[in-house]
Picture 1 (tube, rainbow, N blue to C red):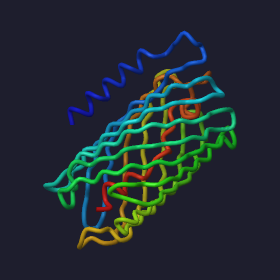
Picture 2 (cartoon, rainbow, N blue to C red; picture 1 turned 90 degrees about the horizontal axis):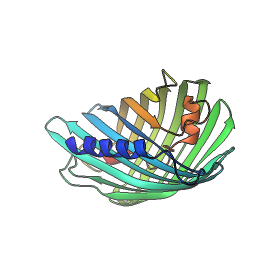
Picture 3 (cartoon, rainbow, N blue to C red; picture 1 turned 90 degrees about the vertical axis):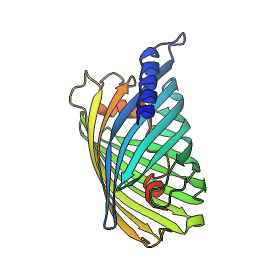
Picture 4 (tube, rainbow, N blue to C red; picture 1 turned 30 degrees about the vertical axis):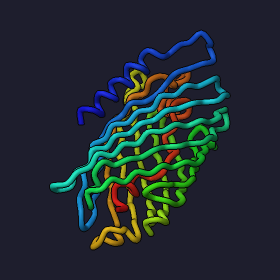
Amino acid sequence: MASKWLIAAGVSVLLGTGHASADDALQFSGTLGGGDIYYDAPDKHIGDWNANGSVLVSIGNPGFNLQADFDNDNLSASAHGGDFWSYGADAYWRDYAGAIGLNADAHAISNSIENGKGADFTNYGGFGQWYAAPEATLELKGGWMSGHYDGPYAGGGIVGYPLDSLALDLTADYAKADSQNTQLKDVGIFVEWLPLPEIPVSVGFGYTRTEIDGAVVPPFGDRDLDVWSVAIKAYFGGGGAGNTLRDYQRNGAVSYDSAPTALVQFGY
């Protein structure tokens, strides 16, 4: 647990020092967040404390963007537990209409809750955002996983902004691990609220219904999960002129770009 907060603090310091450059078109921004996720299944209940962060370098707007991400989850279920890490990068183009780019992430879990073994895999693919209206952003992603899991993943969603300080994120994801004969399908909603524009810290609440078919560890097999989450996120730069939640999300780091994590935490 201590290691992830040390890394988070380091990212915070880095972001706090990078707001200007000799080239006015070069901008630094990012996010730092944490929260709790609770996975509720008929046969198992798993807690997940997590920390995450992103660092973004934007070369103009419109222009190219380079982003680095990390995520650390501490999983616990009864007497068992695991430490899950992911880290990766994005390269994408962003302009007034949206964003399109490539993503690659590496994932590792130190100790499977089910069988005491690790489960490392990578994913690589593409993603896109379309700013369809001031009140709506459409999102798509897809790609391939290799390693412990080997197969495709895809997803889509819409982010609505009924208020400048409020975002409603509706998503649907799919992943198939051919090597494990496992499929994941989920539908979720996440509500994010920025109480004070002058203090760029948001709070969020989410619910996801997840279905996993063909889980490989007997006797669990197929399972349906209710996934509940609470989160807090700090934005560093990227707020644009209005410093609204929409501004931070459309000018800052992207987040809907990788394979679903529930497949890692429940699919073996």
